[in-house]
Length: 118
Length: 111
Image 1 (cartoon, rainbow over the protein chains, first blue to last red):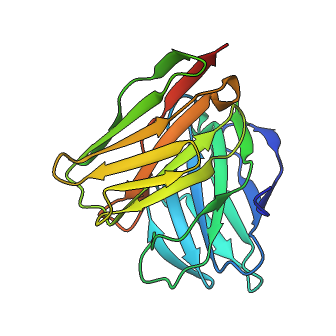
Image 2: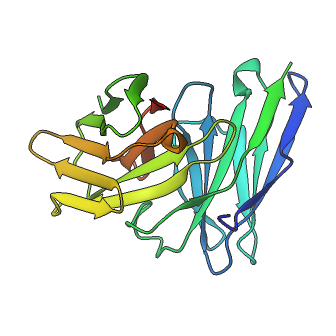
Image 3: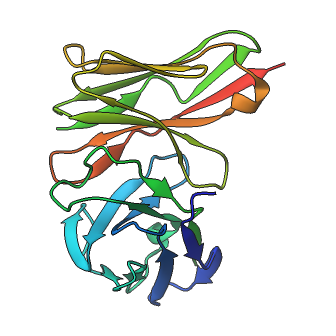
């Protein structure tokens, strides 16, 4: 158990709809990252939040957006869903300084949210 | 362009043997490299981190090497067991302030 919880675990959406995925980070962790993992691929970095501010972003369009709350939990929002958005969405928490996206601290992943877009 | 390549999609070995997985990268200068284990339908689980100034790191039956000249990391599992069967991912910090993963190698250890 990593202490990182994600919800929902599975969901099905229709193309064009919007979805919100949620993540509770491990206690004491101030940094949350989101990843998209398609079948047979490694996780792809979407963005990271450090103390409620976006602290880095991967090559994803603006319809992927996020929030981090004062308790360091986080949301990933995806608008105008496309079929290619079907994937496992992973949240990872760590304790960082915000200076680097990956400062050598251990990163703990949740079990993910499976999104299917039909 | 930046690339992370893990040697093969799948590796099958016999129980008790040593599994060796490869992670090669190009156009990166990572300060750290990590290895993760991922079981089907689950999130990745951190295994080991190695820094650029470290040549080798060990944890129980696991060993990681990091050659910044060859731009390669090797991940070894000694005395492998069927329970070691999983996908193993390497990850390193990209130049664009992100962390990037390889596609993974699916290891199957046969009894």
